[in-house]
Each structure stands twice: as C-alpha cells, then as structure tokens.
Image (cartoon, rainbow, N blue to C red; front, top):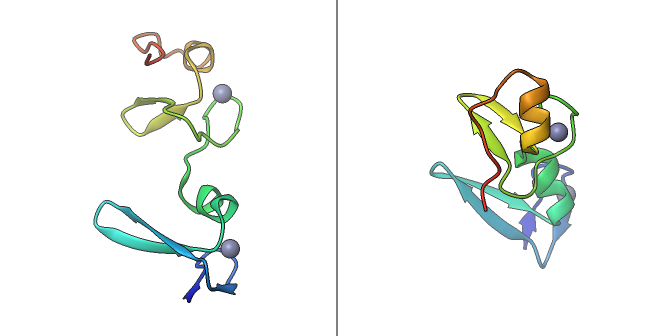
Length: 77
Ligand SMILES: [Zn+2]
Ligand SMILES: [Zn+2]
C-alpha cells in the first residue's frame, strides 16, 4: 500500500520510481509522467521516450530542437 505523491490516492498496487537517489511513489504511470517527465520546450508535450537534452533544455524530437535554435542534437536511435 502506497500513497501517490501526485494525486494522493492510496493504492495497493502502487509502485516506486527512483530518480537521482530520491524515491517517488505513484498509483499510475499517468501520475508518474505528470510528476517526472520533462516537457518539450518547443511544443510543450510530455517527453515519455528518450527525447533530447541540451543542458537543462528538453525537446521531444530533433525537429523541435532545431525550431528552438539547438542544432547540435540528433534523435537517439
Ligand atoms: Zn496518482
Ligand atoms: Zn516537441
């Protein structure tokens, strides 16, 4: 039994995600994504796949990075 830190729901099938040494408890992937997934700087969608990172800037794809003037990034295979 764990309590979701995003929505506060207590759920018997909750799960933990460990990120940078911190443990987060969630009741659903939706809540985990809402809390942990970065947003694309260009289009604002949640980045659930690998995405692209340039310093502290995140992009969902090569195209969005280029639109924002970041040209050194390429989609990871
Ligand atoms: Zn939740
Ligand atoms: Zn994007």
